[in-house]
Image 1 (cartoon, rainbow, N blue to C red):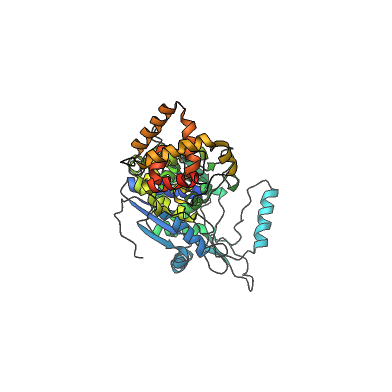
Image 2: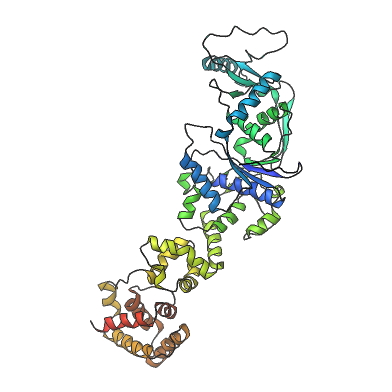
Length: 474
């Protein structure tokens, strides 16, 4: 894909997941914040797949990430770019750094490097590579061991400090003496993660990086390499992690952490975007807001420095809000496939009307689909126990009367049915349950349903009368 050329001042953010599994909630939130920041500033949002971990990266994981980004409608302006397709570029930069003296070959074996680190630990120092093969003026390097392929190390500055004004955490600084010479290429020539990230951010002209705070320790290394390349580092913002309801780091034991599991469980992407945005960001006391409002309001000044806490009940509340607010026809289109998955027939009924009736009680699309099976699934007569308890002779007599009078209604609608029920209650001097419960059991096979007049209307005159006739004929 050809990279678009942007003005030097244009905001450019990126989301750069590793395809070693599904897209987790923390990654989705990072993608959302990066996307929203770019959209707010009329900039560009770039998607980059960091697939250099050949042992763990899989095509299935790549597709899982792309599916989640599509479901959340976080569409990149450029990409996806794949690091494995950029190997020649990384090798070209490494060769240039070797020629410039900002990188060098290191022939120390892994065992020798570990011995250096153990020696530093024993002396009470930070474990690090001791610079055996680091070229310095007047220094004589050891003889090159035969049959040993070297790594390439970055010649890190040894004095001063590397710092930045974090967009979220404020000023952060690391003493360069604590940063050893990072390996940027392995013995087989393949570049390492921190180096690939630097070259990508440089080439793609990334201006702002919003990512999890588990990357804080990588940032000074990446800044130092960028400066050695003569590049201007992006501005960095590190978002605190998401905690589970119990205050521990969010994990599988807290429930689903795979974004697409929430799609399967019946959550709306609009609700997930709204909820994820509120995990660590706020705009006053606003709890519910549209994607457009998020873009209009989003800034890094209101990103929290403290970890956010995942609250499944709050997510359900947000999802229920979006379900209630959705157009009934649009909601029916979302729920229909889930009804089919339950072996129901969404075309057998006015599904939009069913949604209007049921959506005020539902927290997920799956719950809506299950509730809609009252109308879309095969009819199952009530259990013998329910029939024996509620369908005695007097109840059947009431149902027969209701059937006769309902058949004569000129208009089969909720209002006429409600008026008929009320008239019968008044004429027989009985309470609603005396008629409504037998009606529910006879017509739906269930003791509990939404408003009985609405249920009867949606089932339709023919269905209701047929089921009542079948009951009286037993």
